[in-house]
Structures are given as structure tokens and as C-alpha cells.
Length: 270
Image (cartoon, rainbow, N blue to C red; front, top):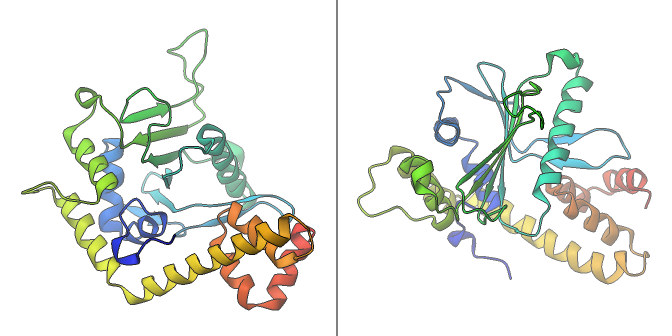
């Protein structure tokens, strides 16, 4: 059942992607998560689609930005506990790196990258608000590999309030509930809440969301009933593949453009 657009919370993937396109929210958001000062961010592409080659899987990045030090940040909202996030983070990392190399960058010049998953569940069951991973030597734990690849998992279900800042706890609680605490004076949270309320009344965004949900529902039903079971309905099978990969923009394009749809059939061997 499709949730009412007017009741969508900040943790909704569509809403998160839209609101975080505002650098006045995205920059302080990243600063609070990482505990560092970022002077400037640049949107490489909002909800960037990365393709390696015609027969490869692809990944859609919710927020893909770079700071003044050329550190790349990929920030993703995750609300489904049954996803294999560790392997997913590895896959994202690989695609980002190869995408940079494909643009002519030497591997020795690969940028520092941080992949951030914001989870409305505890991905590792340890009760932490933050799980930070980097590659270190098993035999010498103080020896880092130095590949500049970090993966950070945030959990709104954390309990270790003594290990993180109160401001980060407040941020994660807002993400989960989309409600400001009484008498809130936190500028970032207030800005996020103002943007969320404005987004809920944005008629163009509402139209985009409803169109996307309709396509997802129709393609899911058609793909399950015909494309996957019988292999007879090419569009149903195509929809299922695009949905599984989160390629919503291509899905909408394919629904209205027959020529583009044929290109995708060929790409996926349908």
C-alpha cells in the first residue's frame, strides 16, 4: 500500500534524496555525521546513476558529493533490514572507483571516499549509533592499509549515547520519527523539518513520487505475474530488473519511450 505523500518522513528514500539536494542541509548534515568541518561541497550529480558497461549491473546513488579536499561522499538511506549491506557497500565502492578510473583518473590518484548508510535499524546488532569501517592489518591493528576507503553505518536504533555527541543522537532520532523535540533550538533539525514540510506541499515532487510509485506497482505486478514466471512479457521482466537495481529514472523513461525500451531489452538480453 502506497504511503500518502503528505505523510512521508525524512527517512523515505525519495524525500531524503530531494531534501539533501539543498547544500545548506547536506553540508551541515555531513559535518554532524563525521564530526569534521567541511567548507564547501559540490554535487557531482544528484541521485547519480553509475554504469560500468552495457552488460553490467549498475547502482543509483542517492547523494553523491565532493568537498573542497576532493573527498567523495556517497550517502544512502536504508530502511530495509534484510539487505546485505556489507556486500552492498563493497559493490558501491567498487563502482565509484571504476567510474573515476573510466574518466581518465590514474588509480594512484583515486579520491578518498566515504560511503555512508543511514539505517532505520541496527545493521550489526551491537546497539551502536555509528559503525565505522576501514581496512587495517589483522596482525598489526594500528597499521592502516591507507586506501582511503571508509564505510560508515549509522543506526537510528543506537543505545550508546555516551559514545557519540548529543547532536548526532538528536539527528538520528529526527530521521527516524520526522518530529522535532519540544522547544527544539537545533538549527539543522529545524531546517530539515522546514524543508520536509515544504517538500510535502511541493506539487511537482508529489507528481513525481506518485508516478514513480504507480510504475513500481504496475511493473512489480506485471513482472511477477508474467515476466518472471513465464518469461513471455519482456516489459514485465525489464521492470523487475530495473526495480531490483533501483533504476527508477530509466524505468520511467522506458515506460514512455519505445525506442529506449528496445535499447534496454538488448542490454539485458530480453
